[in-house]
Picture (tube, rainbow, N blue to C red):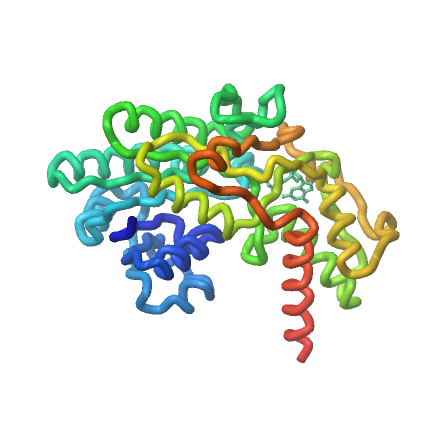
Length: 326
Ligand code: GDP
């Protein structure tokens, strides 16, 4: 399947990779950017391969116009506040962009499909954070939704709403994405914070690293593979929910150790301290997903392993510093 895709959240990590994949496989791609928003390098590099529309997701009229202009066969909703930590400071913003905006978009897509007879597929980038209170690991598509953060609660609402519109007849897909990283991750996420710091320590530009909860465990995958899962899920003949995960969890401490190992530092403990102020009011203890459905139906699996993910991110950050010096 290819056609015209409209992607929200196009300036984010996943948005950039998704636009690259879609444009590279014959799709016409449109993206939505917030008015006045700066564009990342990855989007500049794509040039005219992506048509950008300025609109606020919560501006119903503007979004209706974007849909009319793009006339998409598929809408990928990747927009939203991406940081769980930030959602504790901005719970209302999290509710608006991760929850309410999805209601606006589903309503617009549904009405457009009804009015024009032009079928539109919808994909929601859902999140493992909807399972933060889960008592069992790994989680699968039947695990009870139990958010523990404003971010997770808003994503849970959006996740349910996708199911509501699917039952109403829209081809609405939800990919429940576990943490997925890359050199394009912002340092508000612990992975990039660690790889930037370890690179700077290795280059003699920083002395130490301060972190929060080292015992938290996450199922960390490689972002370009997760974007590929989204495309596969959207293209599948039946709309459903799909867990997208590696099935393996590691602690923040494991990530720190792997990053230091990459630069040849085994004895890293004296370089890292813990600040309780960086602990969250509530935090998922262990998020790990069972992606069997995605494997069986979509032929998808997470292939890049943990050490390679950490290694690629550290190498990238080190190269950036070395280039900066030159
Ligand atoms: P999240 O799973 O989407 O919240 O991704 P993050 O990368 O922000 O956080 C992953 C885990 O790392 C959470 O359990 C955090 O509590 C933990 N963590 C420990 N230290 C830090 C830190 O300094 N920054 C962030 N962002 N997370 C930290």
